[in-house]
Length: 397
Image 1 (cartoon, rainbow, N blue to C red):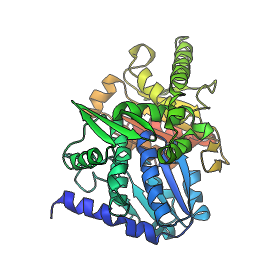
Image 2 (cartoon, rainbow, N blue to C red; image 1 turned 90 degrees about the vertical axis):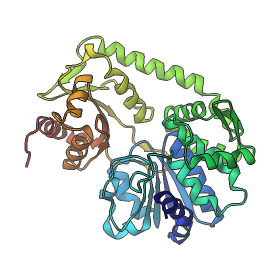
Image 3 (cartoon, rainbow, N blue to C red; image 1 turned 45 degrees about the vertical axis):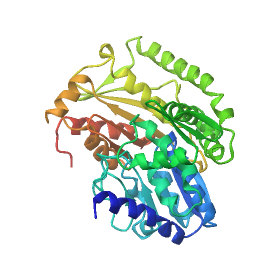
């Protein structure tokens, strides 16, 4: 049996594991289009199984949230939530956790925990397994007329912008047969939540609405709209949200143009959102800003890693209030640093992020040339000193 067949078979049988989960179930989903679509699909299964559950929409997996999961839920499902957050889940509870994630970087998840990842299974290269596609396969053998849910599965592919290929083309054919997918030349259009759009465009708009409206629970509203209709109303806010995001970026760039925004240590440099411009939206909006700003060489020393620092509001959609003040810290590379990482002469960012965050009881993750860290505000200075030493290749005890 091929790796692909084994992987798909595992997903088809996963509903049995979901069925055995103790209630109430915490359904933790990422706040982009892939996570929300996957959350919608798994919620269909939980309803069909008669399970008591609650949806929590995460911008990042803050350790404070993860450590409280066992006290709030009999079990938990995480969808498209990146990073080794499971280190903050007690060992005795890990058998009650299922993780579906399509990100690279988690090589050795705990044996006790069900962790489904296409890279880990060796099937990601020739197929487009977003988290929403995996969620669709979990419900495919359980629901009637599964083809009508294919549009939600395909929405998650909009994150990478990749066209369906390999095994995923079977899903497209199912969607066409169920009249929720149309092929028009090279374009694939889907019908979802009362809206008919090209899937990549719909992904971008759903993601923007969810992230800009995070503190108004728009992500949860999106999942409800997928199920009951009404997505048009949410998308009607996209133009306004787009202008608000442009204004945020423009205001932050204006501050940077004063020439006093970038602070330095020996091997790192950082920008602080000291006016809390981004505190009212998902932290991933600030992540995007830092990705954009890092391309502008005039702001930064080309020989140093780039960090951004913004304070997160305490409200977590579907969860409630955090007790501590958390900082979200995207880490980016200049073009020169990217090259040196590729040559093995500088540390990859994912390694720096994970090691430095864990040292201060935070969470870090990412890829070779970009990453993200969350730490509590009271340990920020300690984090800065530690990551600066690591970035310089120093051994820190």
